[in-house]
Length: 506
Ligand code: MSP
Image (cartoon, rainbow, N blue to C red; front, side):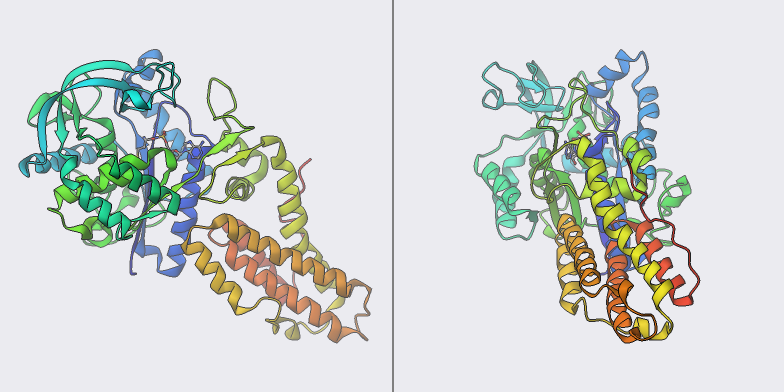
């Protein structure tokens, strides 16, 4: 592997970013940092952004007495700010109102039409603006409501351009069954295979009557269906032309120029990892690859390598919603727990493939237990002990015994499977074992001169453990990893004070 292109969903701007959006984007940030270390800064491209067109956004904008674009211009920067606050370093933040996205999306659809993958027909059926999605009777609750939005869908009858999905279903089923298009984890793969066996209907690529959208070049009565346009961001996000240059830093954000010369697209296409929540599996694992197969005449080399669907956060047993008033704002977490504290609390709640219920009231307890009393306290105890008990610093840095090589192999394995929760557990286990070693050997009771070999034996083990902890934490809690590593360097140089890594929160 010589490049890594990863994406998150682009988020609707109808409401402010919440902890669910932050979860996906943080996982992507951790993976981007991990692969930057594995490959190089230049070899990774991390795309995220906002989804701004469609009836849903237009409705909310109107409620706020703003034009849709004015509204999006207010909302989109809130996502950028939230990601900045969480220390997330993407390569490009795409907005679907970016002119280059609009032009490239049009080009893609013209090409689909030229390849005869599209046809015009009447659609009679149901539409839920909340999900921006066409629904079937059998998907509704017994009261006839959209299950996700708890409101009745609209009955619509309109002319649409349709995509000939049926042509691609058998090949997609094969590719996914064989893991050539890897859908992970395995329960998501089973879900997609189940959907594919249901003979899904062709889907619309354009709608009349939705004025807030990108007009079809050959039919200006229609705008591109918002989901189709949104999926295309993964393709348009890398393309140059239409005013966009190769260097994503020109817009003043992003971590580094991912490529200095040549085409981003040639370097990074296709996606290596597409992170999504389990709510949008059908669009990503069926519609999106089918559109790519149509565009690339069935050439499977242009499909994403892996689509990973993670589970959902619920709060005290309930779906997060503005109406219930239980939405957790990631900015508040950063304000209270700091950048790395917030990153830790968001990533350490549950394994990635499962859903997890969280209670905000337990956050402080977890912060204190794992960070203040765990990693932070270990570092501080060791600092004190080195200061008091060590005379010959050289001999301190020789041990490698407490952690075997297997631990690093296991770490890499877990990271490659996005098992960040398990990595955090692994790190906490090393902290715990180090604490146990200190408790068993009690170097603070030993004599700094007479017992020097015993003191060195214990402390060199624990210092090595901290070196490893710092390295494992690098993609997850970057500032903490840096702080630990700086402290270790200071200890080497015998110049240190001992500020707490994570002050306890009451
Ligand atoms: N705009 C579409 C996506 C288009 S991508 C081509 C959309 N946007 S969204 O704002 O609703 O964001 C959905 C995504 O946000 C989910 O797939 C997931 O990544 C994240 N999450 C939203 N709520 C979440 C939780 N409660 N828990 C975890 N992740 C959540 O759908």
